Image (cartoon, rainbow, N blue to C red):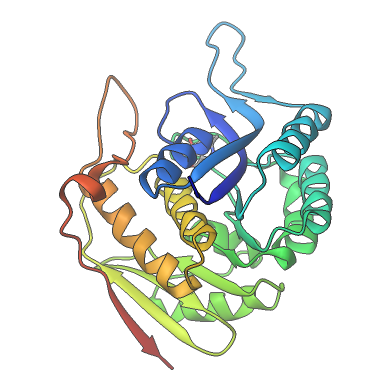
Length: 275
Ligand code: PXL
């Protein structure tokens, strides 16, 4: 069987809807074989108060070496990396890996409120990791942090942010406008052209893991050889369906439903090239 492969370097989200778990579920939906390097475990222990359990670089490196030697990868995505040390090591590893399609989701804060990136790690992300990316996928708060607090209130602001983020060195920038009013508009920028990807807004708070799943879907498309624009468009359809049919269980912000696009969607995404 010829199947494309994608590796995710990210945190384990015990709740199952975000992080590594979201990535694997997404890869599966796109018929891409997923492999994982867990950087940290996110789960709360009310007895000790601990909520994030980072892994040593030795443990992370072991996973990457195992994947490289036994499976290989057609694309990679990074999610929660948590520390400056992990970011620096991962960037160095990517540089030596020869992997072509690199999706960097600059994860900072989870929908459940966990801090997923230490404060001093931001500069390393900007300096060492983002320049290696085929595409970065910040949401509005992440884009704002990466741009020293730039205010984002409109699609024009998203375009301006994309332009500034492009200067950090990635090939493509996708700034996601999920927090604007009106339709859900994301801006894709390749250094020359802007594309607006628009989907209907879905009124729900249950979007845990949406960003993880969106970027994993992009990685899956790239692994299969799609263009960045095609991969992002398909990924947006996938995540819109997942949000429309998002799930709720016992408590907290519910996860997106990864099978929704395959099972019942219908979702229209319009893509417009703009100046
Ligand atoms: O959705 C962001 C995210 C990423 N990675 C991990 C998470 C979360 C949010 O909960 O737990 C591990």
